[in-house]
Length: 124
Image (cartoon, rainbow, N blue to C red):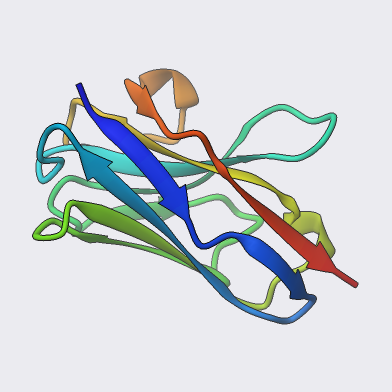
């Protein structure tokens, strides 16, 4: 089993930045691809970014590409999401996920473990 705990969310003004962290425990995730998803009020959960087990390959949703950066520190068993140029439309609960495979994945059904989420609120 893998436990995932997100942190780093908060309230920020439009144009600001945040860095989300997702610490994994219970098992090393060095061979696991990781992903970030988000869910806004009244909307379905949507893909944000994913990174391969090695950390070499990444993929982003069109809405965040160029503004968000996913990274992975296998030595710390932690994945990060740097959020820059934030917009009010980025307001959501952000979830970290891990999958028992090394390749990137944008479909939430491909993930085996989920964190509890961290709230990101962007004011205009």
